[in-house]
Image (cartoon, rainbow, N blue to C red):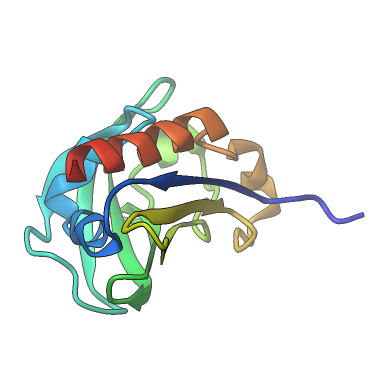
Length: 161
């Protein structure tokens, strides 16, 4: 059986999809939504993303790694319904003093928003590292837990309140 390389959580929140999507598409708001506590602020890309190929750079911090930056490129975009981005260490190789020559790229964070009949939204948040090609980097994953992802969904709902 193939190893599962993704986590997914879902919840229904009493907020319309358009309000949730506006927050997800605005990288400047991502620190408000971070249930893992890794995001430290936006370094570049201070306007909302509008489509696949848009990118932003976030300042990050994790135990065992310290401060670093990640450039996230939007890899899926359906206005009001679906957004996903693929983060990569920025600049490339800048964490080699911590992780060596590993290439941890190939993971994505995705959000799907499905309207419910009562004006709310079924939110599905997926963290997928199945695209990581460097087998030696797989020991770094997952970087977030299901509980942290659930916290992100709750923070998204609260921010859209």
